[in-house]
Length: 89
Image (cartoon, rainbow, N blue to C red; front, side, top):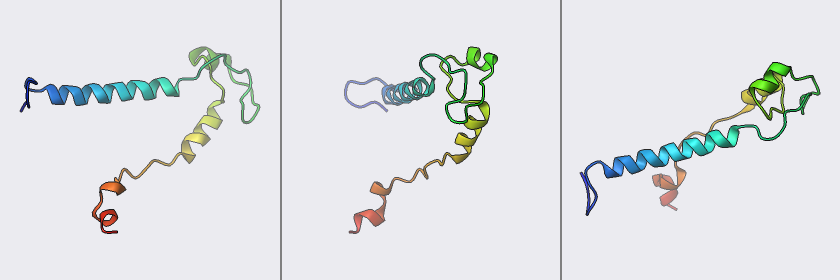
């Protein structure tokens, strides 16, 4: 269903393009930047040459990355501003 001068499917295409743009931005944000370190920034253990070549700009060893990933807590995904409870105040 199109509205106004838009063709059918234009809204879905715009939503998909917005999602793809955001995913690209997030992927670029996670890439290490700069020169790789020879030793981990957190534990000072040597970072293997193969890891430094595979991920240019790497700053952490594999163990520190695993520990950081374990401590990551995802958000609940609940939109509190749109809930009825927040509108009752």
